[in-house]
Image 1: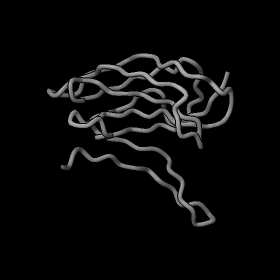
Image 2: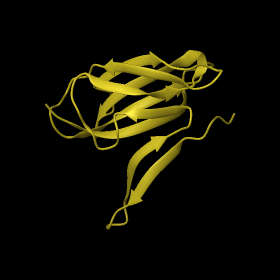
Image 3: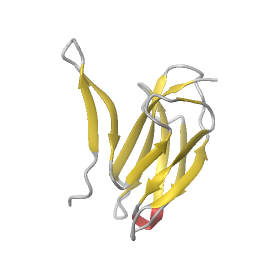
Image 4: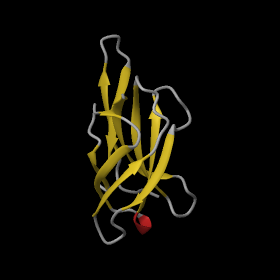
Amino acid sequence: LAGPPTTVLVRQLSDDSWWVLGASTDSIRVEAPQSGDTVSDPVSVSGQSSAFEGTVGVEVYRHGAAKPIGKGFFTGGGDVGLGPFSDTVAFANPGSGRGVVLFVEERAENGTTWVASAVPVGFGG
């Protein structure tokens, strides 16, 4: 079953390895945070989305961690089109280092990821 595309942005480094810069989808258009922003707890998120029943999950990850350091969700637009969202997500701020804010729409049938947008961030004060 094919859904809307998620585009993964990558860059090839000088040692021929690849680094993921982010991900985006037309159904979750993130305005904040922006790539490279330094965020603190709670992180403000905003943009537009169209998701099943309007629900989009947000997770904050520190680089290299398998479990999120913060989670939340918001309601944007639903099945009829894009609608705005603006909220905050609390997380255990490591105070430094890098990570990602991940926006995910899950499939209604089984809860697996349907589409995602990922924004790389830094952690600070």
